[in-house]
Length: 281
Image (cartoon, rainbow, N blue to C red; front, side):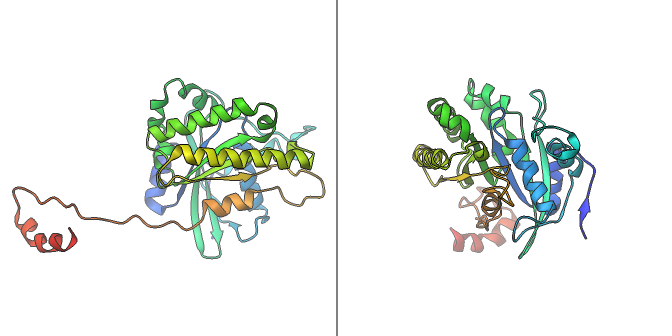
């Protein structure tokens, strides 16, 4: 049975409690101001709720009111001429939104981090502080958002900003063993197909560059998305189904390993375990 709740968002403690109880996937979102983070999260919820993402169904949410508030400005009832989404306030603390997603193989809990874009602007002056961004430490998936319309007009600025963020995350050890996506947002603002094609090529090149800079097993994959329809003829927005596919892809389970060091003063229990250690070390 679908279970919903009234909470607008989860704080760190309530998110941790939910994950301990149910498990799930943590999506850490890295995005500057007005990069489209809130709109993207709200649109994924809206599409799930309306059954417009093939292979996925809405299974409930612990932050239902928060999603409804985020979607409100984009609906006709808001009486606005153009769709809009409320921004995350600069002073807001880290929070999370929650989705329960039904797939062909079962039900998965997903939590999305929601941090003001100004926090990422400010942390570049002291990159070591990124290690304190709990959502990135805990994340299974990290999404770095890039505005495609700004990539067209200010390619050097956007490229430099994204590189600095990735290098700071690498220095803090936040990239290893995670699913990494460079997500181009606001593709709906690029009306000419030729411009969209050129910008997509730039995004792919940037993803390759970030992969080289990240090193190790860190691989960035580029993905173009639009949280609004590019034209009235489109029935669904672009790229969000593929993004959800990536977020929910199967991941290898962590392997438990016994320590190789034997205690200097062995207890009776240590002595009983010693033969087992010997076969594992």
